[in-house]
Amino acid sequence: MKLIILAGGFGTRISEETDVKPKPMVLLGEKPILWHVMNIFAKQGVTEFIVATGYKSEVIHEWITTVQEPWSITPLNTGLESQTAGRIKMCIDLIEDARFFVTYGDGVGNIDLGKLLQFHEKSSRLATVTAVRPPARFGVLESSNGEVIHFGEKSQADAGWINGGFFVLEREVNTYISNLNDSFEAKTLPLLVEKKALGAYHHEGFWQPMDTLREKNLLTEMAMSGNAPWYEF
Image 1 (spheres, rainbow, N blue to C red):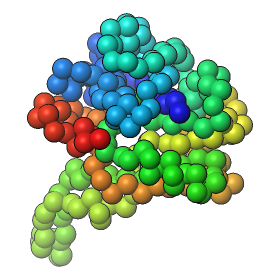
Image 2: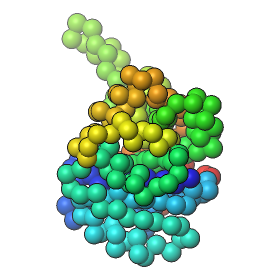
Image 3: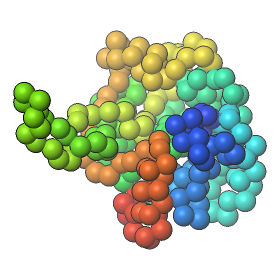
Image 4: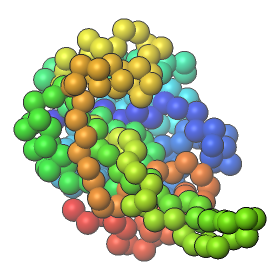
């Protein structure tokens, strides 16, 4: 199976880094987070990648020429203004397979791809999204009559489930994308929900996006330790 990586966004929430490079090129230690995403899949047998670029695409395209791992990496400039579904649609044109993975170029986790794929196959749905617990970012505060009666760290288990990326899609999902301006999250996925064609694989393990400088520093520390959770496969 092949993997489409969405790597074309502007990364405005981490502008300290993305003024000069696209977000997937932000380094975690000695390698960009895009490499870490690819490595998660490569360690589990997926080594054919299509990278949908946009903002500062030339930086990613140049980096790809330097990758020494035995991976097949095809960069595709999907434009500055294309939305996520539009980028996926353009990448599908390069894929003959009936089924493929899709993920974002700015999040890592120890998702078991074998179990994800098995869940998808059993569900017989057109798409499966990996549901994750959002990382705890803020302290929980409870008050009564203006007085704080409890303050502590928020548990991830209390926060419900969110879209963690790491999708499995059937080629037919392409018919739910009408143009390059379609958002995968805001338009395509809700359409699939209406058709009862979207499944959710619940991942209880590690998952972390890189949306802020604080999260970048956290992931860098993990990567430099040599035993980051997403290295375990």
